[in-house]
Image (cartoon, rainbow, N blue to C red; front, side, top):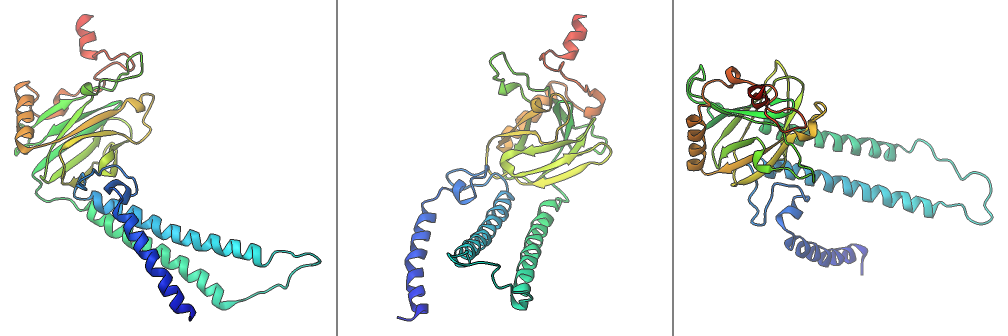
Length: 300
């Protein structure tokens, strides 16, 4: 039987076995064990699938290149090993133009390919909504988060906000998740978040959303996306920003539109209205103690 026919017949069962194995994978396994995916396959945002696809496909290409490279190295070590009785140097070959062109062009094509796909996806990720359903300002500070939910007024008079404090662990190392700053987002609504810093460079990272952006003083970043699955998600600062960087945590609650509006109404009833800058408190709690700086001032 000719070699090509043998390879063709061998490829059929291999392909069937691969398809069967992939069919039994969970959505998280199919997406490279990345966070942001659940059993029913619903991604956390409208961009999560795209980000995971870039990651997984890049690894597939790299693994194929790695297998070929490792195979050629192993073959060369075995085929051209020094055998018993051999002395001196083997025959030296130079200027094999076909091979030199091959190992120059292939890496160049790979680099250009990775750049093209990354640039394409980054352009989509960085395209901002012109008229989002929800406009929010997220403010990083040492070492907590503030969130302002903008309204329609240009002077932010109808905005509402929540001011967070840093995570403070108990003696056993656990922390009360309910006391972390919480960002509320309505599901299936376009969201634009303006990222600001009060002091040093921070990085806004919602882990399951598979994307993070830095926050600077004097230069605001924007991030636009659409949450597509209700749930509670963990967030943190991803830029070393000082002594209590590890305590700079927050939660994200993606809820229905009615729940979102109810939450904004609660903030309004509490008097948390207008620009958050007017009520800003840099340290909402004393580092490492969990005590509110306002409460300590009142006690004094």
